Amino acid sequence: MNANVTFRPAVKGDALDIAELSRIAGEGVTDYFWQSYAQDCPGLTPLEIGVAGIEREDGEFSYKNCVTAEVDGQVAGMSMAFPMEAGPLPDDLDPVTRPYMELMVDGSLYVCAIAVYENFRSQGIGSALMERAEGRARELGCPSLSLQVFDANDGAKRLYERLGYRVADQRAIVPHPLIHPTGDVLLMVRPLDQTDEE
Image (cartoon, rainbow, N blue to C red; front, side):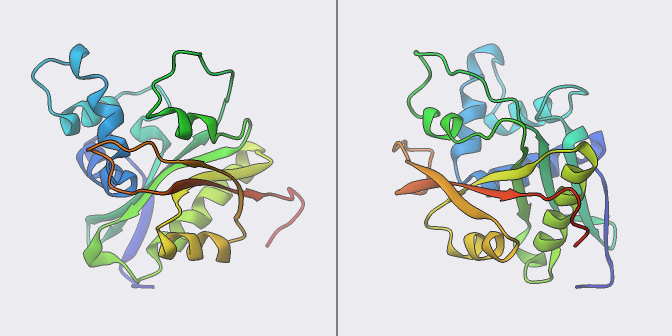
C-alpha cells in the first residue's frame, strides 16, 4: 500500500467527496434514491440532495458513519457502514428499490458504500477500508457484516470473497434509465466470530 495513505473518521467537509464516491459505488442506484427526494428539495440536483443528507449529524447516511482514506491530504476513497435494523417492508414499496431493501441482514454492520477514486485504485485502499469496517463491527458487537454488490462487478466480488464474504441471497435488478447494471444484485455476508482475533 502507498505509504502516504492515511485513514480517519470523515468530517462534514468531506460530504461532497462522500457523495461522489457513493455515486461511483452505486452505479446509478444512489442517484435514483436521491432523485426520489427531489419533490422535497426543489431546485437541487440529486448530487446536491445527497450532499445535504450526508452533512446531517444523524441518520444512517450521515458522514458520521464514514471513514475516509487520504493520500497526501486528498480524499482517495471512503466507506460508509452502520448497524442494520431491518424491519418489515411496506406493500407499496417502490418496485425499483425493493430488491435492495429486501437484501438486508438485521443486526449486521451494513457496508452501504465503499469506493476509491480511479486514480487511487490498485493500492490496497479498498481492502484496508473493509478491514476497518470489520473492526467497527467487532467494536459494536455485530455478529456479521453485510453488503450488496452487482453480480456483474467481478473485481468487487473477488475482493469480498477474499475477505471471507459469501453470497447469501440475490434479486433481479429492476431496469431504470438511471441504473447502469443489469442482471442481479447480490447480498454478501461475512459472519464474525467475536472471539476470533485474526
